[in-house]
Image (cartoon, rainbow, N blue to C red; front, top):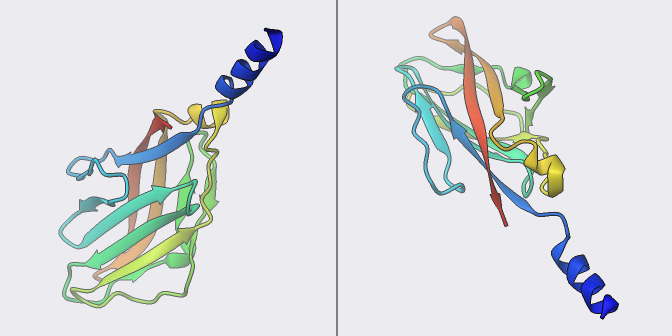
Amino acid sequence: MRLAIVLVCAAGCAPANYLYSFDLTDPGAVNFPDFRRPDVEEDGDVKAEIRFDPTEFRAIAFDVTNKTDVPLQVMWDQIAVVSPDGMQRAVRPQAPLGAIEPGAKVASVLGPFELPSVGSAAKAYDGQSFELVAQMLVRGQPREYRYHLRVKLKKL
């Protein structure tokens, strides 16, 4: 009997696995219920599509569309993620990227970005906020874009 209780506890007491979902919290942002689809935030000059995946791909999909009539320069080597504790870590594209021509969209995968997917270490991130910070030259003027995201965890 004791063996049965130990086996049930061993199977049922394992740490929970979690799936992360990040939603943009900035005014005007569009969030999609399907976590595989990027969320969207845009102004008159720049459209950003963002999808954080800290467990499977350990990266951030960051697609930028230039809505202006002149080339847009993203400072790809200066993009960072600010975590809930205020620590800032660099995330870089997997391939070199240049300026974005008028009307064009550039898809990038930024990394590394990894968070725990199991147990209390993962659960601690539920409801926490992150920022994706990107420096850009828009119409020749420096501009800092700060995309604010909140974590929602789903227990698997």
